[in-house]
Image 1 (tube, helix red, strand yellow):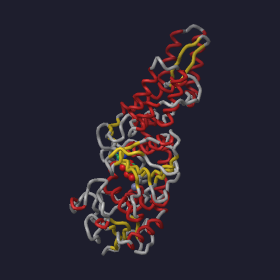
Image 2 (cartoon, protein in one colour):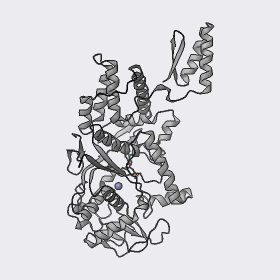
Image 3 (tube, helix red, strand yellow):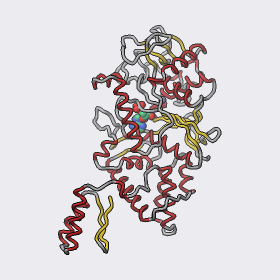
Image 4 (cartoon, helix red, strand yellow):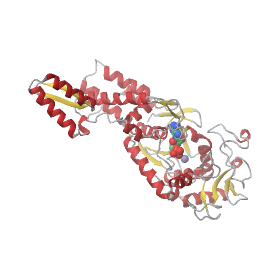
Length: 455
Ligand code: AMP
Ligand code: ZN
């Protein structure tokens, strides 16, 4: 395998590692207190792009993506768990709400052609793992029970704290953004809670050696990644906002627990903006896949837009770019059908080189456009290259035009147009054609009638 990706820890482009032909991957999963927006989905598609880029050359991947359903605290409201705040707003049991958003998350991944992970462990079902890890961290001298009964990680005990983000302890001032002021029992301001004392909280709490409480968000990912990937992660993925403190703290916990560097390559996807702005509930511009579908856009248009940008660059998604990607997909699928029906694939080295060079998907797509337009490459070969490329891109380019049934109304219009043509009522035929086109079909006349396809 020659795939190399930028590693946030070493700040170099590094080859992806594997052992016995198997690469272990961990992707920080969704916090299931709402539906994933297109920004979250960009990060999940990044994970899928990495997976597919490994598999295209015969590598095997074992992927774990966790479900955060407890312990992710709000940055806006002190001491509030995102799950509980939202469950209260929806007047629902928090676990029931979690399962609903989790189901939606799986639907979204399927719509985006994201290959299913080996396991989606839930934080709420991994509490024993976390308690075992915290117990070990205390006994090894990396954690302590604070004066408020919560358990804290001692940031000073982990020597190379700060290497992922560059936020070293001596430079972290008290009151930095991610310090929770309800964590009153800790000895140093940059320490963080591994286990939070339940206090007055009554929901989503568990018994522990330190009394009833709930886990901190960071320990969840350490416990689940170490357990399910046998103590070593080849590629760890998350959005850029997770670099600090989430991944910094996760690294300190996992490395202190195992005693070695547990993650080989830290990949951080840059943020997605929408129409130039940060998506936020308060500004009302949070865009979901269901919003694309409501506008008759193929969800894979979002996937193509993600691929048109380098993963380490911030990107601005717009309705115009989604419309344009939607048209590109339709055009490519149509060409694919014109180029034949073989399912053979041909390795295209130029495409592969682009992908393997720090996932340069925009350059890979440029290569695909050159293949599309080439006068040197025959139709069958074009199709075979597209089929190969689609193993990585996941855009369903070989989808046949008939996979969406036409409505009864469209069928009646098609019949009426055939009748009009047979009776040489050309202007009627043109009017009906316009109606059919407005409904999303493309009509081409043939010797014995007409043919249609989805535009
Ligand atoms: P959450 O559901 O909040 O736990 O986030 C799930 C993933 O989405 C994490 O990897 C975040 O870093 C990532 N993420 C959140 N917002 C964005 C955004 N606007 N663009 C890209 N990734 C994001
Ligand atoms: Zn995580």
